[in-house]
Amino acid sequence: MVKGGKGGAGKVSFGKMMGSGPDGGNGGSGGNLYMLSSPDITLLNQFSQKKTFSADNGLPGSKKKMSGANGKDFELTIPVGTTIIDKQTRNNLFEFTKANERHLVARGGKGGMGNFMFRSPTKTTPRYAQPGAKGEEKKLILTLKLIADFGLIGLPNAGKTSLLNELTKANAKTASYPFTTLWPNLGVYSGHIWADIPGLIERASEGRGLGTRFLKHIEKVSTIIHCISVESKDILKDYQTVRKELLSYGKGLTAKPEIILLTKIDLIDNNQIASLVKKFKNLKLNVYPVSIHDWDSIENIKKII
Image (tube, rainbow, N blue to C red; front, side, top):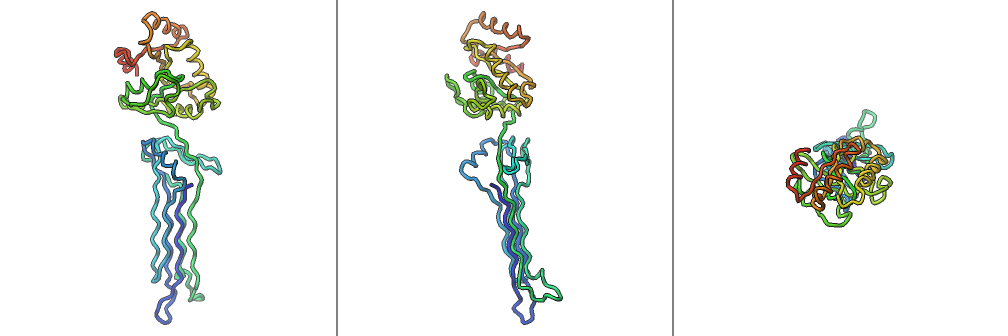
């Protein structure tokens, strides 16, 4: 919930001298609520504890035609890649695609006029003033889609996070079991942002295994890095499983440039590597063998990138 500040009430007042007319001042306007984008994706954490954000109210008017102070504006900082949706209308209000974008989200209410503003030749002693107007109130849905240059995708335990750590020094958690990565990890290599997308599974596009929560992050990725482990019993099936989910999800994911990596090649010998690479060549696809324990293969991947 976001709220603009309420306008301050106008003042009903008359001067102390005999025959003095109305001198009630106007109320101040309520503050506006703005949203500002930042590269810090952890900013969404602030919404886990607090659900309502408000700008300050305007102050009421005073005697001697003195206006109340305007309420202070409130600036809510959110991560780049956040889409703001009106919960009631389901309309997209704003999409923050770069840092330091700033949008007015909830306007503050106008201050009420004091009785000085209602004087006239026929109403010399108005004994009323306006209340301040309420600020705008909106219930919003915030959806974050990571914006990255390269997105590492693949089935669980395909070595995506290890590769991210090797290339970007991201220091993300790794382990030898599936679904170690529950949230996307980010790293920077050669000036480009890399996102390690948690492992996709069959029927991920239908929401299985939180798949739709992960697939949405691929929408903003420029290039897909598709990782397939040599531990797989059927590497082509693994590849096609993930591609099928991208196709089912839609939104142009299968049209994105793709680099296929055969990971963990330190676990097999050179003949086995050659055999697996040949399977992809039969489909007219290039696959690049890589291991975080093989310096030459990492350097080759850097050149390809």
